[in-house]
Image 1: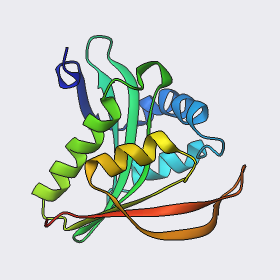
Image 2: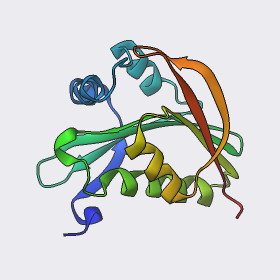
Image 3: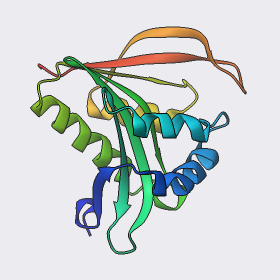
Image 4: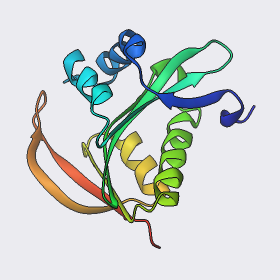
Length: 155
């Protein structure tokens, strides 16, 4: 069954936060605070927090949070519940966002990733992101640089 036949995206709501926070806590050694997610939900100026919902169960199985500032997009957070990883959901989620922001006039998209997160790095590379920089000691627990990846959406 293709991913898109059972997955849909919608804007994150406060009722989603227990599920989102559970995914966040399982996925990252330094999870965002619940208040950070609430702030993203409330920031209608530039923030676009979306959840990926399994339509058969109406279950939040992932999320993506990105900012749109004029014609540039910054992906701030993305995660898929471990039970649903390696099924193409992260790729579908990110591809849908890239297509939507490009269609709305975005010309550049960027994100940061740990060099040790090979699965995420490989996905981003597959979708067309290139390394454009490095941020020293960006992450902690464990301390690690961040690779800054970007993609020109005009190409």
